[in-house]
Image 1: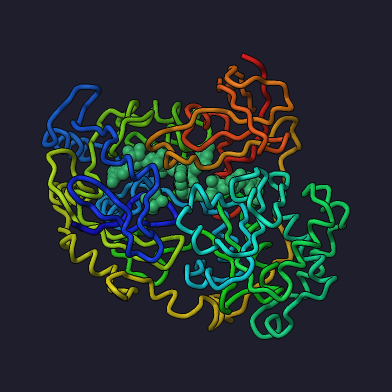
Image 2: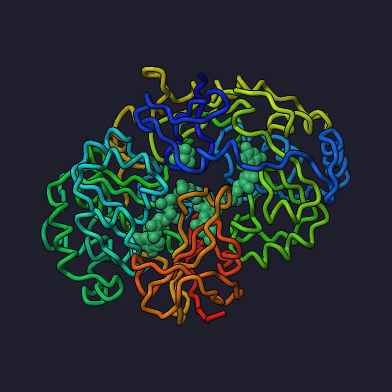
Length: 580
Ligand SMILES: Nc1nc2c(c(=O)[nH]1)N[C@H]1C(S)=C(S)[C@@H](COP(=O)(O)OP(=O)(O)OC[C@H]3O[C@@H](n4cnc5c(=O)[nH]c(N)nc54)[C@H](O)[C@@H]3O)O[C@H]1N2
Ligand SMILES: Nc1nc2c(c(=O)[nH]1)N[C@H]1C(S)=C(S)[C@@H](COP(=O)(O)OP(=O)(O)OC[C@H]3O[C@@H](n4cnc5c(=O)[nH]c(N)nc54)[C@H](O)[C@@H]3O)O[C@H]1N2
Ligand code: SF4
Ligand SMILES: [Mo]
């Protein structure tokens, strides 16, 4: 029996037992509690790329590495892009930074994921820390805000099972069906909802004045700011009743409240402002730095940890990279042709490059358009360690098996450094040890991040004067209101983005007269794509839902970045539907 950690991009970072070729959930781990999800359960059966190839012809790994190095030697470093995704969350995945930084390649900054929300949190709190599972378990009321816990964060269910539950989601999710209150708001209206709650909390005198005085700044400005929004206007924007607003506030009054916020609220240009508003609402009620309360988003998991792979390379914003500016593109652990917004632009940009390298596990649209395909090793075949953006756990990922297939990020980097005569690497174990010992401790055989030794923010915030900074403005120049359906694009149950079993349907409310199984042409200002319809009563009638990873989906989404955080804004688009 061997212990490791799930490498996939997920809140839970499960502890995994590997036994006789099978993966099982670790039943002793406080969060994993013995079960895994469909994605990891099917991991070892997933068909992977087994041979390197060059322009469609299989070649040996030695030939692939020689081709890569000789190409990089004759290309211009200014015209080389290093593009890394989040296919594997291990810290050792970043070792390639060391080569590409020395070489002089351009890197990307920001994210396709949580960057806008993160920027908003950092503006107010100075650093983005989550809540530990043990603190969440001590709360009385849990507000699940744009996070689909039962699908994307299933191991959290145990910690919140007996709580009073408020769910804020345009979709009546499985959790919303069980909630005490479900606010089925209009998409893109979370900022207004936070402001609406702040207005009523103020009227109801729900402020924690001691906390506001000792731990925050600019509360008066926040009051002026939210009072600038009329109640009627806010109610209309959110599409909620005053009764719902008042009854949810009544549940929060004098209670320990945890806000579990997901990426659903911030796939918009003003995503930073949404998180800043949610934080400001929580801060006015004193819900930070105390037992059982806080706002927990996808945290900066590396906070306080050593980062031997930090780089100072030139960067360009990730969601809007113009691939046509580069002759050479090295894609690692990513599928930009499908997961970046505006696939037409991504593909036409990449078609102009002379040499695209895909370094990954699975075939997809990105591997298909690449010149050189290099198979990676899986997490079972290499040394790594991972941190968690959803909890306090740190997980070792020791090498558990040998394989003839693929190459690890470490060995590939070692080869490139040597072939360019650059300084050699330390050993994998040394890097993993350096990261692990820099900020974690072991209790009963499991590692915990020291960031959660004390309740985050209990000793002050991470801003200059250690105070929370309330918001007093928002940058939300909404694009002109377009006709059409809102796009809700969230995470599917059986895949992790484009890895594993993808769900390619378009979900729509039955009231629009489409029949289950028919083909519809879906049009945005960027493209038209066909989808097969599934009907769902769980949706508002003004939205359609298409899961992340669905074939063709990102032809429809905009090549824009959030106002702050250089994040993708997949939902800043309206869609029109026509029977196919
Ligand atoms: N099974 C599975 N698990 C995953 C992943 C996966 O692909 N599959 N992906 C992983 C990754 S990369 C990430 S980033 C996390 C993300 O996981 P989550 O944070 O849960 O994010 P999403 O599933 O994108 O969206 C969450 C919810 O936001 C709702 N939503 C959409 N628009 C709005 C809105 O305007 N306002 C509000 N309030 N809600 C809205 C959606 O209906 C959805 O229920 O999950 C990780 N876990
Ligand atoms: N429309 C829409 N688009 C979205 C989203 C959405 O909700 N809707 N979600 C966005 C979000 S939150 C995210 S995080 C991104 C994710 O986008 P990507 O980071 O591009 O993620 P994946 O689609 O999971 O592709 C990851 C690739 O990593 C490779 N891989 C896996 N393990 C390893 C490894 O150990 N080594 C190497 N070298 N490669 C490996 C696999 O081959 C896989 O194809 O997608 C974004 N795109
Ligand atoms: S993807 Fe998430 S839920 Fe599934 S095994 Fe990995 S960490 Fe656990
Ligand atoms: Mo993500």
